[in-house]
Length: 368
Ligand code: NDP
Image (cartoon, rainbow, N blue to C red; front, side, top):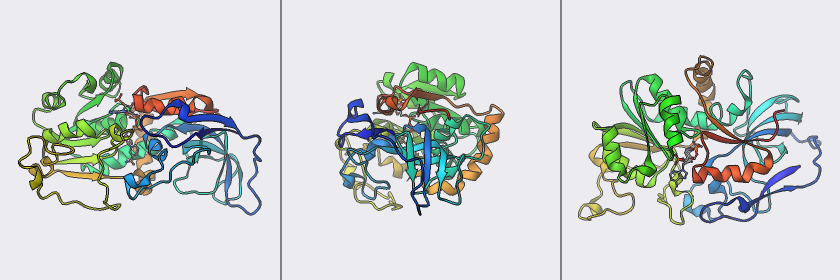
């Protein structure tokens, strides 16, 4: 059973050599006596930015963190698409296809069924269950429809817009009749946004010396909805360009993942609420501290809300009901970046942090 192993905890940008592929000999492809687990053959593995935060020991940074760190010397864990080979669980039978939490290895014994879904619709590519029909798809759906209260005609901005989540948010917004602009990190990605995903406008943020000016150019009347994937400087520039009563879905802040000192709310508990009423300490500063433009939360009465996709598992059937026909009718398209073979896993995963992935990054282990 070949596995991708984490060598040690990681600081700074992750490297391919932080992981290695090893064979731990043969694995019995049978569920142990008395276990209600399932043994699966992993077909596709999903590369997701949050996996970087499982490569650190110090969980204090994220406070009420939602998921455990990986163990150095053990296989890394993630989401994937798999086929059931043996089952001790009445809900799964041999031959079933599933997506959910699994190991970065050829075969896994799964005993925790949290976030494990049986695949019912097989008329689409199975790889879609790592992306558009899996966790990133549900993230786009829950973040956009549940948190942003979108309305036809509103101005929507999406950062990291060509990625697994962003490309879908933009297409949802377009189908609703919004004006949609996305930012991405290369010309190829910008072309995709405009020509394949039908965004109204898109720009390469790496070529914009002044993000505030760029946003002002695309949104002379301001932004109603910001789907936040990146944090840092972009969030700062967006705050300056939001309209009154705008909404920000804080989905991810990938620019902060590899920093020693990320911008975090260190001591908040999960589901905490902050009423941004005033920030008097910042009034007289030339350059306010941290994310510099937070005061605009108040000036513009902005609602900003962080969310975690697995709190929205209950919406998965409703999400499928919406998106499956849209895929079948060609109203929604999806771009994937597929690396082949488990050996390519470490390199594929770190592509997310250098922006090399074009669309949803995943690893194909075997098609059946
Ligand atoms: P993507 O497919 O968008 O891949 C990551 C992309 O991030 C890269 O291609 C690159 O795009 C961009 N990026 C990488 N490093 C930086 C950096 N330092 N500064 C700016 N941009 C950077 O990933 P996903 O669509 O899977 O995830 C998008 C965001 O959504 C992430 O922040 C992720 O953590 C978050 N997320 C949150 C979930 C939740 O439950 N809240 C669930 C799933 C995802 P580019 O070339 O355009 O810069």
